[in-house]
Amino acid sequence: MPKARAVLFDFGDTLFGRAGAHRAIVEAAAGLGVEVDETTARNLWAEIQARARTPEELAKGRDLSPEAHRACWTALYSRLDVVVAGLGADLYELEIDPLGWEPFPDAGATLVALRTAGVPVGVVSDTGWDIRPVFAAHGLAHLVGTFALSCEHGVAKPATRLFEAACDGLGVAPAETLMVGDNPLTDGGAVEAGLTAYILPPALDSEARGLEAVLRLVDVDVDSARRPN
Ligand SMILES: [Mg+2]
Image (tube, rainbow, N blue to C red):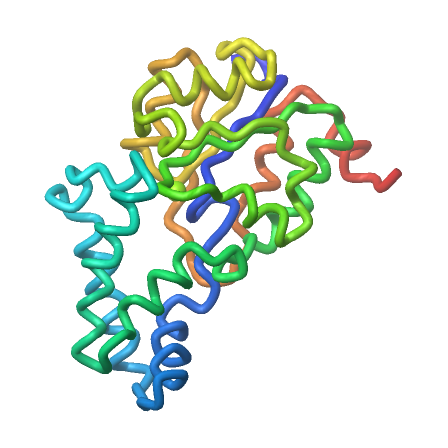
């Protein structure tokens, strides 16, 4: 394709990851007066995340409304109540806490470079809660021109409507827009909407995400975009 003139990003595991992940279990349990060792916390975290990705869980539509999100994730995190009563509820509050998420090390620089180059940026996310405060909490909100969130549109990726809404929000055509995500099944739906998709490999803890590669796929002079002005 010709180089893109606008970029849409997925949120989870693309621009942001969960801060601490299993460490949140250790810390929340300590807050309730119970000590949990790292291995137990890591195993519980992995078990919950694996269950969250099963077809049965995904079919519940947890990202279609705040109520469904709270109900589904509270049930998933209730597994932690075997450690101490109330731990599951505490983990859900962290799930929707803007400071419970961290941008990947190259997320901010990439968004700034795109802004500097005048490339419009949007976020398209399957989420059951408003993630705008996450961007605000990390000083990145002004770099995003539009948000298309599943819980506000009542439909989740890969439905084309979310990608079309984001393109409309930026005033750009799908054919000139790049979608960047980490899930071929959901983010890949952008292709059906007429965009081009760039799918990242699975995220590893606190490593650069490979987002700077996006700058080579857009219609800008990369060196001048990186130069601070
Ligand atoms: Mg994702």
